[in-house]
Amino acid sequence: MEGEYITPEQVCEIIPGMTRNNLAQLRHKGTGPKYLKPTPRVIVYRRSDVIAWLEASERSGTAPTA
Image (tube, rainbow, N blue to C red; front, side, top):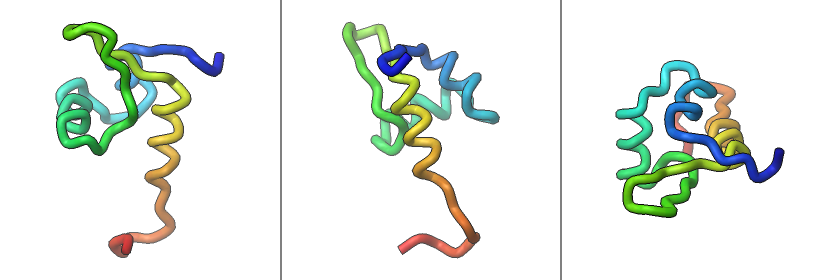
């Protein structure tokens, strides 16, 4: 489903080693996947945005990126 919304817990299930705290830090820094916040206490992600963010981190070497 293209517009499937998932919880932070479900994001952590998709990304090995990701924790809720780490995901919260990424949100705070603005470096994580795009998210939606329909109410002050609810955060959801589009599955497609999480996958796109993850795949954008692909590397072919260990050298720093420019």
